[in-house]
Amino acid sequence: MNKKSQKIETEELIFIILNFVFFAILLFFVVRSGSVDSILEEVYAKKIALVMDSMKPGMSIEVKADNLLSQIEKNKFTRFPVIFENNRVIVVTSEKTKGYSFEYFSEGNPEASIDNQLKTISVKLK
Image (cartoon, rainbow, N blue to C red; front, side, top):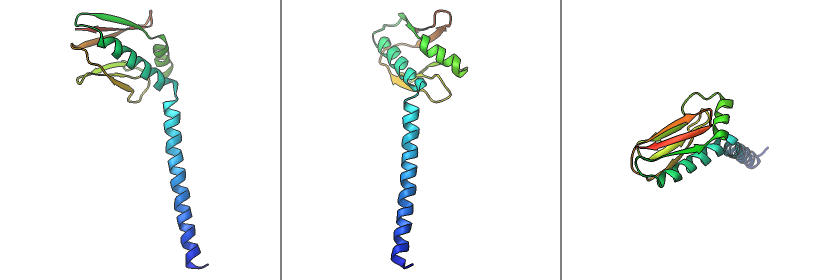
């Protein structure tokens, strides 16, 4: 073998490895973003945040969340699924990942509670 053909083989090997890594990462994100959990997290985070934007302090809402709550039971998830962060961000999680976060603009301190019998999430703005 001459040096030129050996150099080409090394470059081709590096190219194949980099392609494999790229497609593995791409496949991971496609599978993660297409899962039922991530779609439900996004839907309910946006739904609650958009309704909260029209609320005034003292008001409360109930969001029917039977799909999300049944998915939480299926995953045996024990943490509370709706979290309000200090910088006006709602985070909805249904599995042991970071969940989906969405910003809201309403004033006041929100509190969330779950009614498992009615399968609803209640949000009160104080």
